[in-house]
Structures are given as structure tokens and as C-alpha cells.
Image (cartoon, rainbow, N blue to C red; front, side, top):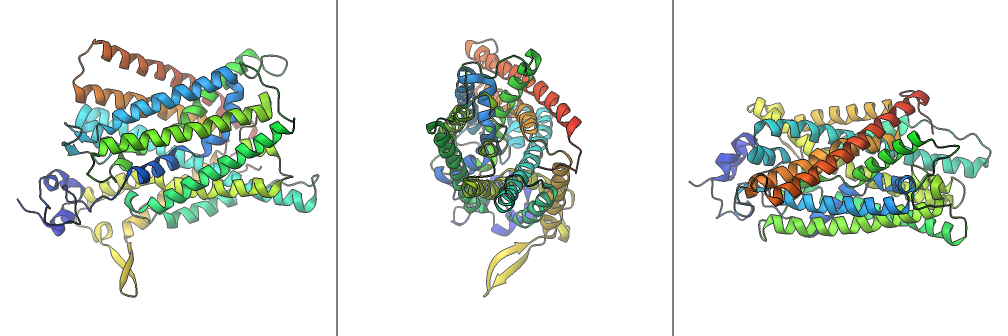
Amino acid sequence: MEGTKNEYFQHGHGGRQMVASYKFAQDEEYDDDGKPKRTGTVWTASAHIITAIIGSGVLSLAWATAQLGWLGGIATLVIFSGITLFTSNLLADCYRSPDSVTGKRNYTLMEEVQANLGRSKCIACGIVQYANLSGFLIGYTITTSMSMVAVHKSNCFHRKGHDASCKFSSNPYMIGMGIFEVFLSQIPSFHKLTWLSTVAAIMSFAYSSIGIGLSLARIISGKGGRTTLTGVEVGIDVSAPDKIWTVFRALGDIAFAYSFAQVLVDIQDTLKSQPAENKVMKKANTIAVFTTTAFYMLCGCLGYAAFGNSAPGNMLTGFGFYEPFWLVDLANIFIVIHLLGAYQVLAQPVYSMLETLAREKWPDSKFVKAEYPIKISNKTVFTFNRLRFAGRSIFVVSVTILAMAMPFFNDILALLGSIGFWPLTVYIPIEMYIAQKNIKRRSTKWFMLQLLSMLCLLVSLAAACGSIQGVGESLKTSKPFQYKV
């Protein structure tokens, strides 16, 4: 049965299975499933992953290492990176099913779960995935505003002196970011985000490098803090329960720093058909995880060596607001640019899900379907869609309001990491791999995979308990919408 371009677009999301059987061999602009030809490579996928992974979490790694110590900090980073790479490669094999190379494409994580595990687990996965992604966006909004406030504060001290009262509300900066993200949210899909991901990835390396350089300078100058093998010690200022809670929160921070399974399938769906998508994605996973782990080691270990057991929750704030104020300002500006891009990388799956539901609910609505081309010199540079503008704007505004209501940095990061790490990064990839490869229950391989899943569940529960306790403590000292830095 021969299909046409127009037939594909009329079917939309609900007709994917029908479209998948069509043949577009004579049209080089379209892939075998009727979608516009994918052009992604191992490098574009790596850029998307690095943008998704290296985010605000990297700044909390010095604090996390301080809670765990040299032994626990380094071991935890290595173990989490290994687990993330292993399970991400399992997930890459599930992009097509039942065969990982020749099977039908699954365009989203929920479709992968439905194809391999059934409808009920698909719904549960969707709830966790989209709640987690929305939570990440709240965390990114908080972090971006804090970096902008840090620039404002640094310049205030530089102009008025170190004794000046320089405290500012983060709310105006969150509102400003929200307005900017409304415009960026009109980028229609992952396929159009490559340039933004590339810029964001470069920015993440830039501010991480500044943090590493400032840490090295502090260590070389002899101002490094006191460090221990086991981290912060129980004593006058730290009770045994406090030590346990902070260790749990540190695990959550590190889990957050390695979370990208929520967008992995969407990234894989941008890759060319040849060579096989799963093989290319595994290479991209390896490049991205090894690159980020190297930076995490440098940031966590050098940051801990620089500040010792009193390492701050946000590494850059530990260098003060005085000198070299311009370099710290530059790092914070890089953070802002990075998170503006990373926000869209994590938001695209949410946008896609909401718009897909709308197309299925109202397939004939012009508000939903109509695209209005914006032309410059008779060349279409952009298409405007009313649903895309209205729906994405409402979502961004909602995220901004929630961020203004709960501006707690480390505890929010830990809570997001603990909630998302086990179900999305570990449990679902392992269960889908077992189902796809028909691994027998109670076999050695099955037991090993279940053991890994159980251990990660325990870590996630511990991190969640610690982060909830931390949020509770923060609520005692901070009022929603009235937070000043």
C-alpha cells in the first residue's frame, strides 16, 4: 500500500501503526514510518544527553562529597555512573520492538513501556515521568533565578562595599525566565533543538571548568578546607541523626545529577535509521556518561578539597561575592544560558504528550491542527500553532509559579533525584529488557537484575526520606513567594 506525505499528516499520532506500514521509498524526505527524515547522529545525541545531565546538579556535588567523604563520595559517583550507563543501554534496545533493530519504532518512553510491559505499567510510568520532568523544570527555574541573583549581589558588593546590605528577591528573575521560556517553548520539537542543546552543552562545560579552576586556585593557595575519609563528622554541631539525613540527601543529589532516562527515548527518536539506532544510542550514552562523570569527579572532589566538610550547597557561592567577582559572575551567566536550553530539552516530552492528547481528542479542530507559516522574503522561517502557543505558555507559567512557591535548592534536587531515579532509570529499563529478551524467571541473570533493582530502590527510598526531612526543615525558615538571597 503506497502512502503520501499528506496522508501521514492527516493520520497524526493516533494513526501511527497505520503509517508505519506505508512505504515512502520514493520520497527521500521521509523515513520508513512516514515521519520527516531523521538526521540525528551520535554527536547530536551526545549533546542532547550532556545538556540533560550536566545541569544544576553539578554544583551540589562538592556538598554531596562532603557528606559522604572521600571514600563514599567517589564510590557513589562511580557506582551511579555505571548503573546509569548500563540501564540506559538496556533502554536503547527497547526503542524498537519486538526486535531491537528491525521492529516497530516506539516514539516515547510510554510507548516503549506499553509495547513491552502493558497498559497499566505504561500509565504508571507516564505519571512518574511527566511529574518528574515537571519537577526538574521547577528545579531549573529555581537554580537559574539564584544564579541571576548571585550576579546582582556580586555587583552590589563590588559597588557599595562588602558591608552593604545586598539581599534580593528571586521572584523577578523567575518571572523573567518564565517569559523567555514562553518564546523558546515555541520550538516545535526535539528535531529543532540541536543548536540550543549544543550551546547549552558548551555552557555547562564552561561553568564547570570555572568552578574547577577556582577550586584548584583555592587549594594551591593553601586555603583548602579540612577533609576526611568519611565526610562531615558527628560532634558538637552535627548529631548522628543529622549526619544520616544529610547522607541520604547527598545520595539524592547524586541521583539527580545522573537522571536523563526521562528524555532518552525522545533523543533516540531523532537518530538516523542507519546505522541501527540502538547501536548509535549506546555510543552516545557512553560518550555522555563518561564525559559527565569526569566533570563530576573534578567538581565533586576538587570542590570538597577546596571547602572541606563545610562545602556549600552551591559550589559557586562558596567563592564569595567579592573577588574575583567578574569570574564568578561569568560562571553564573553560563549557568543561566545552559539552563535556559536544558529547560526546553526536558520540557519537549511534556509538550509532545499534551499536544498528542489534544490531537486525539479534537482531531478536526483548527485550533489544534492549523499551522500558520511566518515568512521572510517568501521563505517560511517559522510556523505558528495556536494550541502550541496557548498550551505551552500555560505550562511554563504554572512551572514558574510553583518555583516561586518553594525556592529550596539542595533539598528540591535530592527529592527530584530520589523520586525519579529508581522507577525511570532502573526499574523500567530492567523490566522491559527482561520482557523483550524473554529472560527466564529465577535464572541467574534474572536474579542479578532483580538484585540491582532492589538495591537501587533502597537507595531511592533513603534519599527520598532525607530530602523530605530537608524540605520540612527549609519550610520552617522560608516563606513561599518571599524568599530572598
